[in-house]
Image (cartoon, helix red, strand yellow):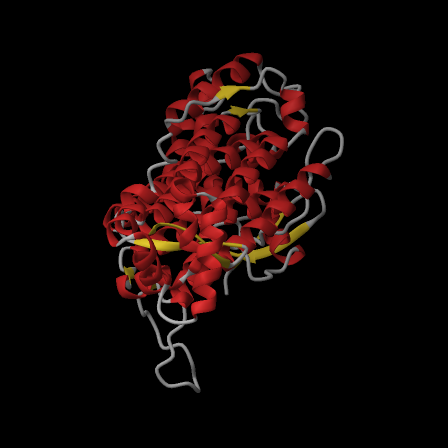
Length: 438
């Protein structure tokens, strides 16, 4: 195999002649062996956009003669997934890998030209913010579609009464449509929160170099580079007023992760509720695969279980993001690689979960017979008659029915109160009227 020799401050190293990266990447590949996860592709794509913006600023100011070649390489480079996501050095290995791949493609020096007026400490957090903004936009769209799926079911079953449950025990009636409306509303909040959390990511420290003071970067570049990044990404980004602070602190990512955590909570809760409704026989979940290697014909709620597991993983990632941000020391957050991996993984997982659940929900069906059978068999529906007959009278009716021991509560009430009264009181319109008339 043909090889080439490259040198850094530590010494020399032999690399394959056709390797698209250089010595810094090769050392990182040895130092941080792959443990199943590579740098998130979203981060690599966003990093190339940051490098392009830096080259555009340096070109306009006359600092980079090779700017055109570097800009073209930023657009064309296929950044390889060869580095472990869990790397030391606050992300320096990722920054250097991108510098080397772009530099080799452009015929430019990876540090003196591709990385001109930059540091890992300003380009990495900036790239993460760009990647996260692009991700939460996709996530907001996914939740919008999920909300729409459940709103369609809300309309379909607007007039199908069911028995509500509190503490996992039969409670007062509502409609199945109202139940699905509550699911849809939870996802509507997730849609809005993920859409709005972009605002927490728009302020970047690009141009601050190592610790936010802009040391080694011309002032003209510092004031121009974020403008170029806005042009490259199409995002409403702005330069942080205090770039030392913006370089040192990563709490904005914790705030965004908290929004993702809330979405995970809703996905877990709704999925678990759907499992319970299916177990009660009130809804029928789509059969997507055989459920057992030993029990013939068994079908399990595997999509819901997958969504719940994704939610659990996102909740765990939220703790990771918070811990990484908390452990940053003085002028930087050296645990940014793990933070980035957890945050972007959560975004990717939630997009997948929302899409899975939306597709699954489109095929959920209701068992009207079971819904009505369970409703009219439960003595708890007598609560609906309290406004008309009072608590004491309804308590007496409850006792009389229990002593009777036969038939359904509806049949008993129709005999005692009249069929017309029972039909009117238990109608979907009355059950969902938000209180009764004075």
